[in-house]
Length: 130
Image (cartoon, rainbow, N blue to C red; front, side, top):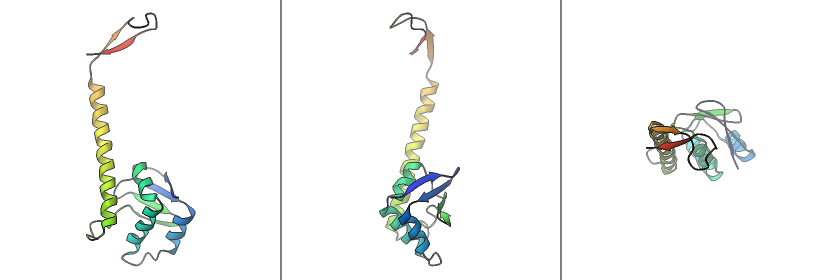
C-alpha cells in the first residue's frame, strides 16, 4: 500500500516500500516513464489516496528522492486513458469540494434568531431558523 501525507499546500509525500522501489527503478529520462509510474501508483492504491487527500493537478509529489508534478502529462499524452481517468477523478473531487463549500456558504447566510427557552426549558438559548 501507499501512504499519502501532506507536506504543505500543494505538496505530497508518497511512502511505501513498493512505491519507493518503483520510483528508484524508474528511468525518469524516458518520455513514457511518468505514465508507467502512474500505472504502478494506481495499482498500489496511491492515486485514490492522492485524490481522497485532496491533491490537485499541478501539485508536487515526492517519492523517496524523486519529485514531479501531479498529472502534467495529460495534455501531452492524448492516448493515455489512465491519466485521463485520474484527471477525471481529480476534477470530480474538486467539483465535490466546491459544491460542499457553496453549500456551507449558503448555510452560513441563513437568518437565525436567538430565543430563550423552547424544548427542554432551562437549558439555555437555542437557534431557530426562518
